[in-house]
Length: 132
Picture 1: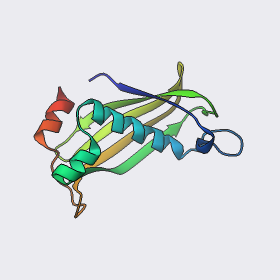
Picture 2: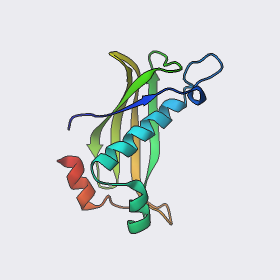
Picture 3: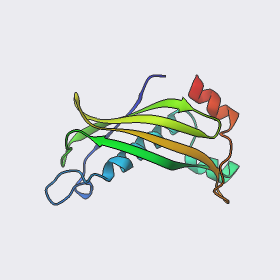
Picture 4: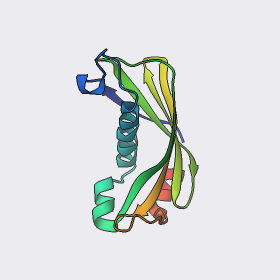
């Protein structure tokens, strides 16, 4: 499956006092890209929670920082699912400024019951869309 791409601007609130993106904000950028990726596949997370009682939660992250992003940079965040299981997904993500790779990460998300937060299977219709 080709990588999904989401673009965003770096705002003042994303940076530290030196105008460099605060390291934890890359996780926010990646979360936004995953949300838009799912939306593009036809799955809005709020509708899943409301209508089916399911949510995706992050269970593991590993990030590698290669170069800094700065205030006003225009970034491209990619989403590439690498391991699709019955109840979880592993997703490789990258943050780019132009042709320069800034950050790369591997994020594991799990499908859970919204009330109990216990793991549950990813619905077949979502798995089918992910594997198409």
